[in-house]
Image 1 (cartoon, one colour):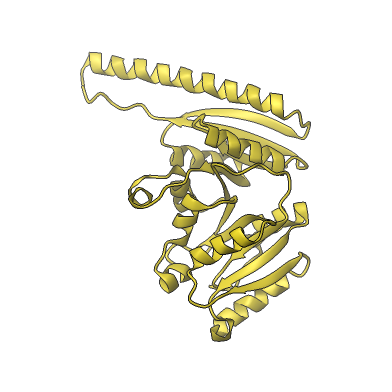
Image 2 (cartoon, rainbow, N blue to C red):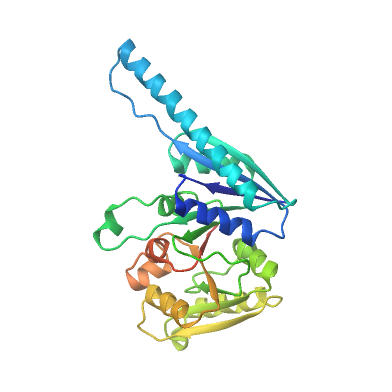
Length: 284
């Protein structure tokens, strides 16, 4: 049984991510938790009237959150009559990161599946993206970010695993990827941006470990031209290969990618990906 969190703000973008999760996990026994978070802004008045206003606002927001969650649940049940799927709704008064984090911890969640909206230019730097915040702060659960306009499919043919061969991969770090690949008999393309002849002994050892771990899964190793940024290499691979249905990366924080290219790859992709983006985390 898989347990999956589906955060929603009741937008079309959030619904698209829910539809994607229902589709890719259609053959799997799943318990889904549809989560909405809301916050009550304090009036700043330490008076009875101020407290009463806050209480009234809290009640209104709670009612609205629960009403909208019930609507989402009705829509889910209309589109998904899968006997393998069960659903729970959670209306939580907190910010989204805390609400999702607590749910992941308390319910022993396997994946978070949520929508991501694109942003460009300065907005990318200054606009807070809930998806990026969750990727950055919830480092104990794999996250699948589904782009706004992505046409929901019920299979995953090819997954691009972007790596710099940063360390000796542990099976449990890659398990979220392997489980998805085995579910769909997907091919994993291990993609490295850089010159393969310049790999350090540590990187070569990491590549060998990766080869061993991929023995039971269809895969190939893909090198892109030297000097290409990681981000542009990934985007180019997606554009040139229609069979690519997902990009996967391990989030190292300020790891190899950012040292090598001075670009926050995870942040860029979480804003601009054209296919769903699986983020796994480094357990140290």
